[in-house]
Amino acid sequence: MRESAFQKKVIKFLKDKEVWHVKYWAGSQYTKEGIPDILACIDGKFHGIELKTDVGTASKLQLYNIRKIKDSGGEGYVLRPKDFESWKVRWFG
Figure 1 (cartoon, rainbow, N blue to C red):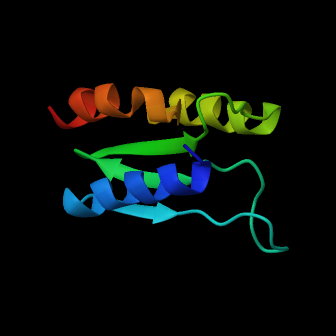
Figure 2 (cartoon, rainbow, N blue to C red):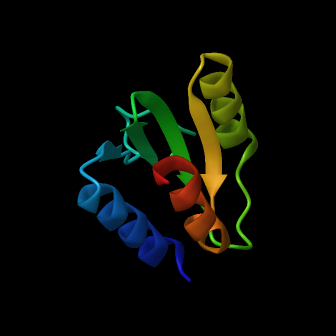
């Protein structure tokens, strides 16, 4: 599955669950690099969700930001299509 198709699937799921979220668009002079693709508040907890294909790899900067989110008490992780169903069960029951 392409990352763009997976992103649409995740965003639709979050919308259907009425979860506050924002798709972070990096790459302009006013945005910070390495921020997870989706920032969400799931059941009162901050989530930084980096989306990758099943074979894609996160950059060192993306992994650094995920670690900083975890160090701050949030949930930061890479989400892949193969893990989508277990992610839904873990965070949404």
